Image (cartoon, rainbow, N blue to C red; front, top):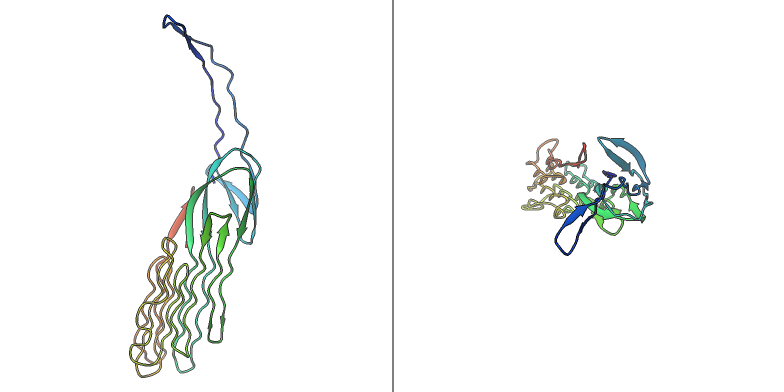
Amino acid sequence: FPVTICSYTVTVTATNTSGTSASSAASNAATPASWTATGGTTNTAGGYTYHVFNTSGNFVVTSNASYTIEYLAVAGGGGGGRGYSTGLGGGGGGAGGVINSTQSLSGGTYAISIGNGGTSSGSGITNGNATTFGNFANAVGGGGGGGYPPNQGGQAGGSGGGNSGGLGSGANITGGGAGTAGQGSQGGGGNSSLTSENGAGGGGTGGTGGIGSTGSTGATGGTGGIGSTGSIGSIGSTG
């Protein structure tokens, strides 16, 4: 976040009852107290100080003055769905939600929780975990991908998980799990027929996940969504 400390020169102008005014000599420049904060791994670039949290911790503001910071919060991605030995693919996990915004902060301690990615275990679907900053930012974990068997749809999340590739006419062809508005996109739908080896949907990211292709030997799954780009100051990040 950027912190700019300014100096101010104060001049007082007095007006009498006759409407005559005169200005005082300029006072000495006054510099307000600096605004400082601790927490995470810090570095500076382009006039900004960056606090990077790869694990949970506290962002501690040690000044009572209020300043506006920029922040980028990324949640954990969803776990991929289980596939089946005959070529029925499991859907891809959705990307974690991304929030790129600003917030005015003053003195105090602000808890930061970093979300882990989801896991894939058997036929279970596990979403990613949320990343939170104080009580004002909640990046939603990515939706888990659908597994087979049975035919499972991708879960909703920051970005939605892709559907599994399944058996049966019409199974899981429609779009996958829903994404969270402003944070991610929908997962891809699976492809299915009355034969085996059907492609699964890709997990959503900055764009909608791809739709699984028609099954064949070595069934082809759908592609993931297009990534999104955010930036803080002079440093860009891809979500």
